[in-house]
Amino acid sequence: MPLHLFIHLSLAILAGGLIGRRWGKTELGVAAGLLGGFFIDLDHVLEYFLVFSPHFNLLYFLEGRQFLASGQVHSWFHAWEYAPILFLAAWLVRRRQEVMVFILALTIGGLVHLATDSIVNQYPLRNYSVLYRQSVGFAVEKLFSPQQYQDFLANKKYLDL
Ligand SMILES: [Zn+2]
Image (cartoon, protein in one colour):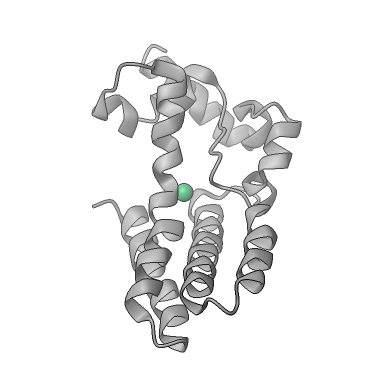
């Protein structure tokens, strides 16, 4: 497993587990933490189908060809904006403790994931705002640093996309 994924997996379990344990629901917390902090990356699969549907090629997916071919990054699940909405939802359902714990662990797992992505990928925090990405047309050219964009173009050329 690549280190980046291993970090996401460990932090998702840790964050979810700690939230869950606070209310005596560790397993529920871990499950929700994994959903928000690890399986959040499934939006990369959705993005692949947006570009290459209906075909799927695992190697191409892992190479990130969906981003290279389109020059765009949507990553719909990766957004700070969901957190305040979800925190409000958790507060509204606070009497139904299981649901509240689930939402809290999901949200905090997601926030930890976004912070980790930002550090590991060396993208500014604003890149993890879906409204910001939308404001620049989801364009890689606007989202990446000049050096990152040069590397992106080199990779695109190398893969002949
Ligand atoms: Zn991610």
